[in-house]
Image (tube, rainbow, N blue to C red; front, side, top):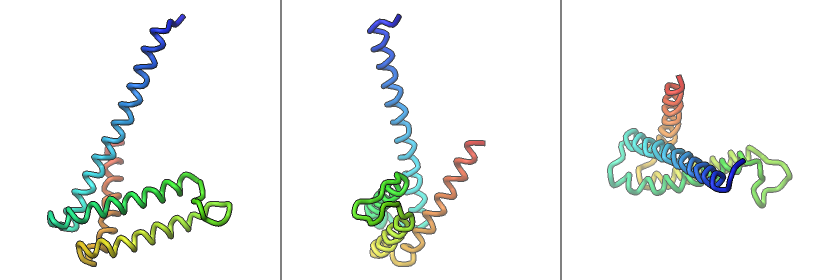
Length: 138
């Protein structure tokens, strides 16, 4: 039979394992974000001054999009949204509206051409990341 000491030791190591796994996921996510920042900076030819002003705004933009995507994937309708079912197009419309708003905000820092190019660069980074993941899997 198990005694209390063995149970506590097993529980302790289980918790430590879970904490380490979560920390590794956060580190991976942070590494991807750092690589994305480097990629965007290079592709948009941002100066140091532009990058210092651009990325706090980018972080705001990114957080808003993540919130919408989490809502969309969770299947829980947003408060104040009419109807009992989830309207996927409504989430997409909100995402598009945020992109339009932030394109104007980005343009104040890096100009209209590069602000529009940002969305293309962001998409190219996703393709790059997807290929890198596929290459690691093989």
